[in-house]
Length: 139
Image 1 (tube, rainbow, N blue to C red):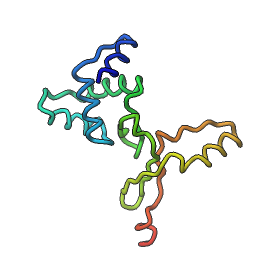
Image 2 (image 1 turned 180 degrees about the vertical axis):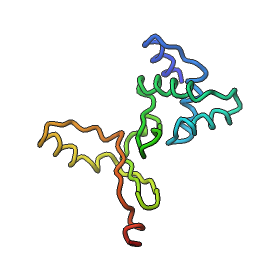
Image 3 (image 1 turned 45 degrees about the horizontal axis):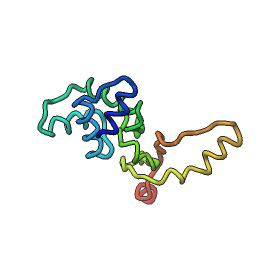
Image 4 (image 1 turned 90 degrees about the vertical axis):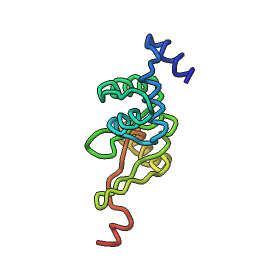
């Protein structure tokens, strides 16, 4: 976590116990909502953190490039370690299944958007909604 401390200090921020605990919880959970992180932090043996503190910690950690988020649905974002932002999320409207494919799967779409309309797409925060194979075969 020393890299975290150095990067925070370079931006005039402090490495707090809360930020360390939030980052550790995100690492353990993989993908998690702020509410999931509150529960994980409460279970780590330390003092419970209010959800507002978790949100502020996530904002600081995201600004520094340690965590990222994806909107898997229309509700709360799902946070993950930034180094794991190598996939695109798939969400089934039928059963709620969530899957992942490499970001490179969307390379052709990203290139076409740039070529046709001059839009540089960032799909690292995206979730593609549709129907999974099981739901398609069942209908």
